[in-house]
Figure 1 (cartoon, rainbow, N blue to C red):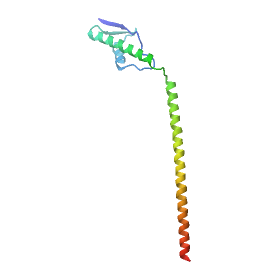
Figure 2 (figure 1 turned 90 degrees about the horizontal axis):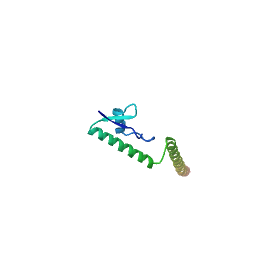
Figure 3 (figure 1 turned 45 degrees about the vertical axis):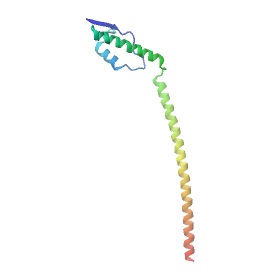
Figure 4 (figure 1 turned 135 degrees about the horizontal axis):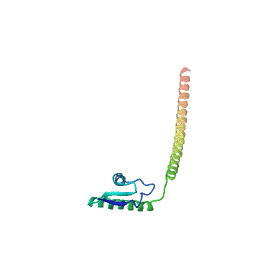
Length: 125
């Protein structure tokens, strides 16, 4: 004999099923929406566990903010845009710093070249 339990609550949309619920559905679900748990202490435990998991999931779904994939994608794109802007800003600062270093080195090399040229001119005279 089996313990027929009606699937009274579905897992809220947007939340994935637990491994337990997926396995319980796979092993005990009937095509009419009921579950054929064994008529034993184990079946009673399965029925109670399923009921408590579904109640907790429903409670979590009510307390969690409603987000969908579009909202998550939009948040991800905003975060990526911010990172891109920060990267460009950092790159601009790095290019500016490299330009300043290049100018400093160029000025130093020019000064050395002029000094060397004047020293060679002085030795030639």
